[in-house]
Image (tube, helix red, strand yellow):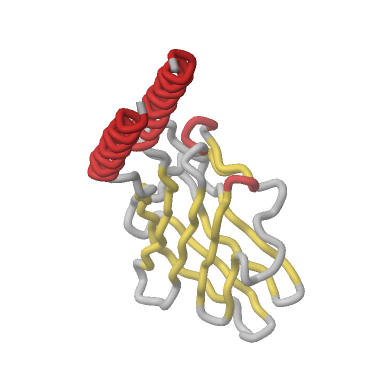
Length: 195
């Protein structure tokens, strides 16, 4: 009989360690030690009354790098009269994409004339992404498409925002902790009945 109790005690110790490890892992997930990761979204605002609009979505790691390289672009779309540029336009991002950004807020910091450009069967287009990005009318765009006999151009500015990544609620940890405690108690009682 003592051997059975020894096995039960050993099993109970294993269960306690497993429950403690599970709680620690869940706690690490529910309460991250660092700031939440977030994407950065750049939004175009047209300042001259034309119908241009655009967004550029990148991984927040670009702030650590200090520039936007092609692999960190998650989405890009820029619509202008007569055509679009971006993911729908064709090969994007170009492999030589290099847009300097601030380490603190992700804002564009490149020299005047830094831009995103594309050329293909449908035409050619570009939009500036330089240090004038916040100034009203500080940035320009240009497009020349086969769908429009005349080149188009305009001016505007960019805004920059962090897109938060959802984090688990602290209530999830409380509920899971209570569930673990109830399960532990139920197992303890059941083992006591058979001992």
